[in-house]
Length: 345
Ligand code: 13P
Image 1 (cartoon, rainbow, N blue to C red):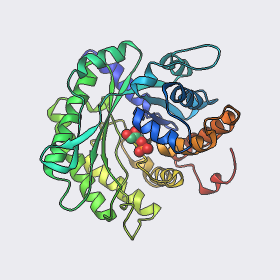
Image 2: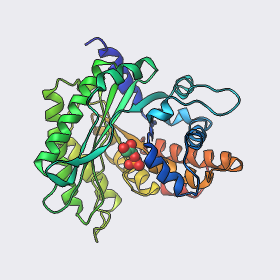
Image 3: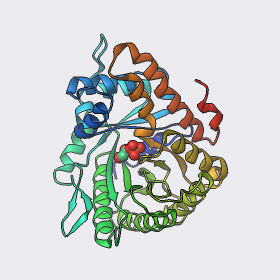
């Protein structure tokens, strides 16, 4: 494979100790939901301004190794005096630009409560274009729902197969695939059920990756943590989430994979940070892969609520964002403590 060394180097850089990945690849409808929540009308200009606020935060590169972009943002530029394409702007800061390439999760035919992620048709051409435009990694999110008698094997196999075909195509074009099989936290299920379903899913994902000749040293895995369903009456504590998540990953993720960057999935900012920290503090030294973050909401929520679409809130919003990036950076080294939430650092 012609990109072998480059892919391995990119994957390593994405999960470098002390840093993580910012997921800022909300599709336009999802970004509209976020902007609606702060009473800001969503249009291409406002979305551009919002992303510019995040990316131009001072010293972001200390804690952010890469940013996942949506196609619209990928083609946008900084909004201040000089209009620099975001891809160049991030690269100049030492941050790797990435691109979301799936086209969304749709109902799986024959399984009305389950989803299959689409986007394989024409993907090779799109990946080649994104590489030329400066992307060095990509993202594809599969969604697995827990409910009565689901997930079905059909849903797990279809999604794992699509993830593997996407990953193989990415590597052919020089892009590191972020492989994201997300087991949703929505539901009444217990932490044990989340463990079982995540283990089943990850086993099939790695079976399919190997079957499709994906080079494991050149991927980044983006899984959910093992947590209780958000409507479950018993919520697993931080130590339990950390130990179950690490155990599940040890059983399923080959040691060739350089790094695992978790999604936040609807956890509170503080929980997402505390869980990652506990895993690294307690188990980090004994694991074959780096454990870090690739959060969307858990990195952006406080900045969004501070910004409110107003120019006068720009620096306060950037500070709020930087604070979350820094706390997660510390958590990826196991050096975070809850008391750091109190003070602005
Ligand atoms: P959350 O951290 O908000 O779950 O988003 C991460 C992501 O990229 C989902 O695909």
